[in-house]
Structure formats: C-alpha cells, structure tokens
Image 1 (tube, rainbow, N blue to C red):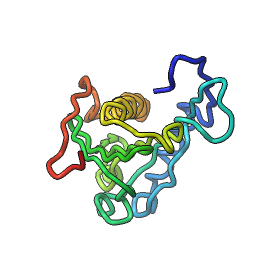
Image 2 (spheres, one colour):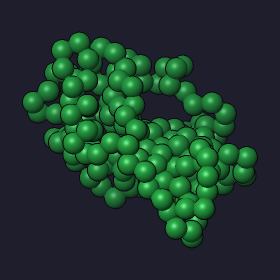
Image 3 (cartoon, rainbow, N blue to C red):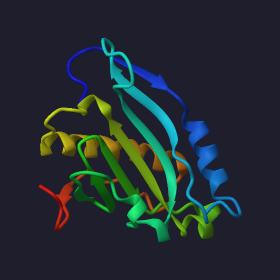
Image 4 (cartoon, rainbow, N blue to C red):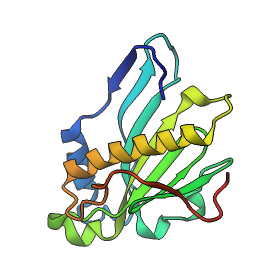
Length: 172
C-alpha cells in the first residue's frame, strides 16, 4: 500500500489509550452517542511530506446509526463482507463495523458496533483499482482484529483469516 520506500510511523495513541478510551465511552450514558474515533497511528513513505498518509482510527457506532445516511461514504462506494464484518470503501477511506461483546460491559457493548477506519490520502487523484481497495480492506480488518483483541471482545469477531466477498449491489 505504501510502496517500496522506507515507511515512517507516527503513533498517536497506544493500546492502553485505546482500551481506556473505548471502555470509558461504554460507561453509563456513553453508548447512546457516537464516540469520536480515536486515531491510533499513521504511516507515510519516508520521502513524503504533508498530509499524505495511511491512518487508522477506532470508535464505537451506536447500532441504530449503522447503515444510516450519515454513515454512507461519498463517491463510488464498494461494499464487502469480510467474515463477520461489514465494510464499505471508496478510493481513499475504508470503514469496517463488527459486534464486539465485552463481558464486563455486556449491556453497553450490545448497543454498539466496533468501527475501524483506514484512510489513505496517498491515493487522492489516482486511478484506484479494486485490488488496491481490497488490500486496504484486508489491512483494516487485521488492524481492527488487533484492537478487538486488546479490548477483549469475547465473541472474537475477527479471529478468522480475512475472506473478502463483494456485497450485492456494490459498485464495481
């Protein structure tokens, strides 16, 4: 995704920040509102300057907001099912949602979906092929798997090797 150049990694939050923030959002009153995504890290070819990066964010999405108009990505959107996760992607952004059951926050975690987002602004202005989008979706799946493990999702929603299937009606 980033080419053959050396890659610079910028860490915004670590695993402890993720688990603390995500669990705090599920405390009383938290599951009824969207949690702002928590930026975890970004990657960029070492020779690149500016905002051209690949970045990863995680947050909670209330179940009643899933699939709503505010959640639809702009532009040509492809929809995928990756094992038990739902993914939508355009040329520069991929968004994955999956149930994540936390045993100690069972009631609150049933009201939300774990949402991972990957943005790739390195691709702005390029002709993005389906293969590239599927690489981004796979990367997002694997990164969200790591977040789900850190959170302790008891249903282990992303444990399987990613198998990408285009959803009916998806753009091609």
